Amino acid sequence: MTYVVTENCIMCKYTDCVEVCPVDCFYEGENTLVIHPDECIDCGVCEPECPADAIRPDTEPDMEKWVEFNRKYSEQWPVITRKKDPMPGYAEMDGKPGKLDAYFSEAPGEGD
Image (cartoon, rainbow, N blue to C red; front, side, top):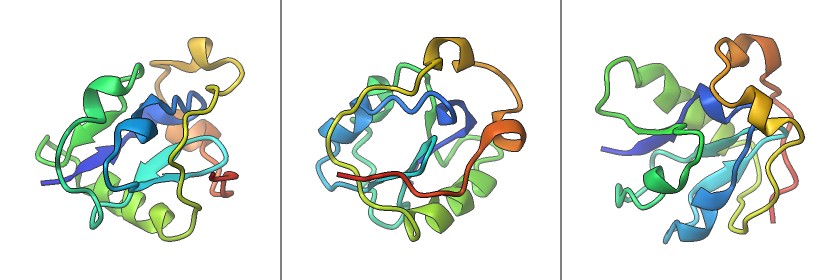
């Protein structure tokens, strides 16, 4: 099992999760985070830290696409280990459907 970041992180990008990760497996894009599924040790400490409920175990239904999404971008983006402010407008974007198609950016974030 591994944990992955799902669509609700897009345009919110809370980073509470990155500070509790014992193996630094979070990577930062311009407007979202991902977890490298091969680096995640399945400890689960990140999941309850996410205010947007965007971190899910890969054992839930239909998570295959998110595992591949997280793998792809974690190999392109810089690692992030420190908490930062969420994105401007995060409160309005939290829970909004269709963010992957409407707002996702492939551009890397700044990382640490």
